[in-house]
Length: 195
Image (cartoon, rainbow, N blue to C red; front, side, top):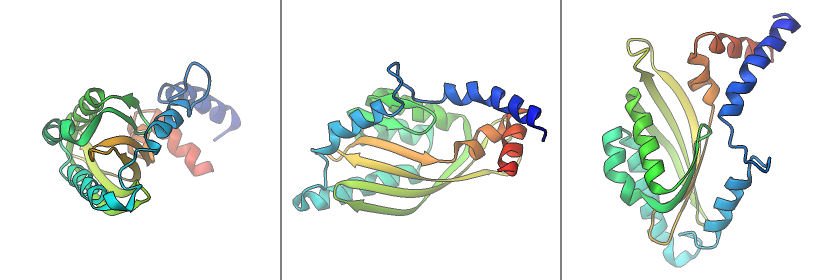
């Protein structure tokens, strides 16, 4: 790819990636993340050895919800799974509040055909849960094609009631989503190949 084509690719991709960022008006892209983390840090379930069993039970509920990922399951489990003032950042969207999170996750699941999440590993350390997962799915647009596969990790903190108060997902959105977009996908694949 010539340098002029690479520049054109960057100019096309920059607005798309900026639209998915969580940049705040103050210009600090991590301000909301840090604020949400600080808000739950002192009251996280599992921080005290006495509530370790309750934290393990909350982690088990969370991983079970991932394993049964569907719009129906999310709508049913969401109100009991997420705290009313929960924070979620899944690399595509940053949300505050249980209702917004449950609605977003359910709408996202509605867009997928045969979504499947397999929890590979889940660890609880000092009130911080780390869940490693693999997801396969098809979109309605490519329902007959091979499934898309992606891997990720969710950093989760539960509140005193065992509900998710904080969730930060880390995964490769470019391979799972942006590479599927016509024109943009081919540009991303070319840029990755050159790196």
